[in-house]
Image 1: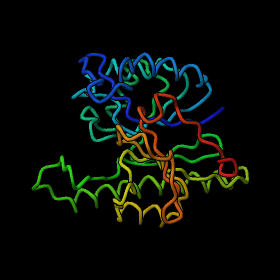
Image 2: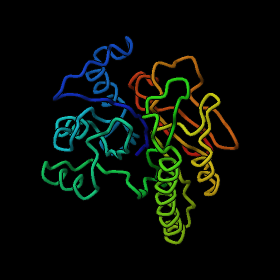
Image 3: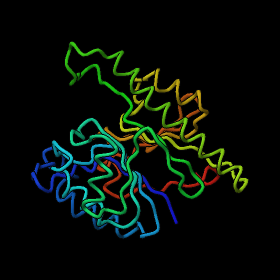
Image 4: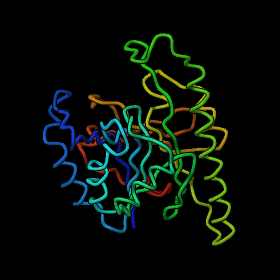
Length: 249
C-alpha cells in the first residue's frame, strides 16, 4: 500500500467550467486525471487531495465532482482550498457521503489520519501574493492568519495523539506529514505564523498546492529545515505524486 498526493483538481462536472483558459496543460484534464490516477494508484493506496477540489458553490452541488473522486482508485483524504465554497461542516460532509454511499472519502478538518507509516494532518493555511491581491482590501488578514494557524495546530495536536498511540502500540515512531492548500514558504513569501506552527511540532515535510502555471521550479525545496513540495495537479501533469519514507526521498 502506497501514499500519494495531488491537489487542485478543480472539477466542474455539473457546471462545466473551462480550465484550459489557464493553459494547455488543462486541456482534457478530467480524463487525463482519471487515466493517470488509475494507472498508478491501486485500490489499497491512499491519495491526499489538499484543496480546490470542486468549483461547486454548495456541498450538494459538489456531489458529481465528489462522485468522480469516489470512483477513482484508492482511499482519498480531502482538504479544503480557497475555491472550495461547497465545503461545510464535517457532520454535513460525512452525512453527504453516507447518503451517496461514498466509502473512499475522508475529510481533513481539525483532525489527523494514520496511513501506513505516516500520520497525516493539515489545513487550508494562508498565502497572499502582494503583487496580485485577490482578497478584499478591507479584510482582516491578521485575523484570518491567526485562525488558520489555530486550525493547523488543532490538526497537529490530533496527529501527535495518533503518533503516540501508534508508538505505544507497535513501537514505530511515525513521521507526521503536513498537507496545506496554500504554500507557507514560496518565492520569498513566508507566512511566519504557519511556519512557526510547523516548527513548533518539528515538522520536516510539508506539501502544498494552489500555485498554477509555474513549471520552471524544482518540485521541492528546503527552507528553515522544512522540505516544501508542490502538489498542484497541473504542475504534476495530473499524475499523483508518490510519498516515500523519510530515508528514501
